[in-house]
Length: 326
Image (cartoon, rainbow, N blue to C red; front, side, top):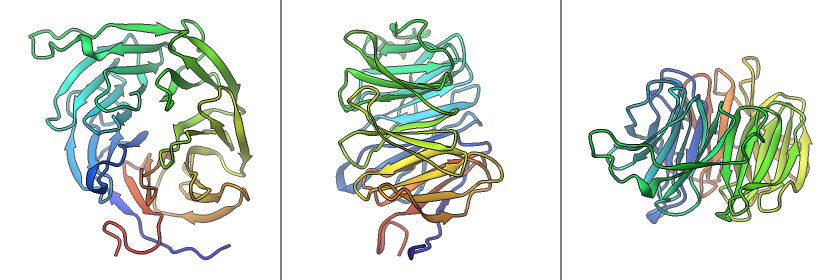
């Protein structure tokens, strides 16, 4: 095993139930960035991405929040909930700008990668991929705000709950991962699938590498991790079979490393791997439950994990001092 600097993670408390998803903003001015955490307590939280300091809690959902994402410029947040709605929030005031009603639990939300996005994609137990036009409902202050107009893409294609939606760097390309063990690429212009890939196990996380612009998509499923070219439909770069059941994966393409989170109560470890050698470099203990979500910060100098144990942890991933690590 190579030498590793064992760093104690920062632990972000405040949630009272499991944390199924975390998401970072892009890098903003003065090297600032933010992180949002979804939680089954129904109260997603916004934090400083470097220190983990609490900034605010978005109040209004009446059920578990399964996924939460920030727009790249961190001005908007989106959440998907078991209360059959998705909400879009103003991150400065904490106000809900839009409530998007659905007919079942919403598991996935995604903004396109642009400042102050005007559209949102949603998916969940309805098995429907929907695109909402947020620019068409500026009457949130009226007594009964209406749900913005939306359209469905690929009706009937998803054979199971949509667990994740990712917007590629090309704003016309969307990627979904569903409980039918398929990753699908969608073209908004054709409103159709342009490729798919069948996985060997139950889908865990499906996320883009946010440390580089080349858009590698990382997917956890069963005991394997899969890495795809996000802009080339169904194009697998490599898959790696591990000895562990994996719930989450995050790639740092620049450093050619990735981290994985265990998916059961007996495996609450965060593991760091060499992407090229496909070997385990580090095993990090700290969580007391499965690790449902993992992500590198936009500057790649730390990674965050969200767990069944109700905490978000930040782990330093750079040599020398950084943030609160001195």
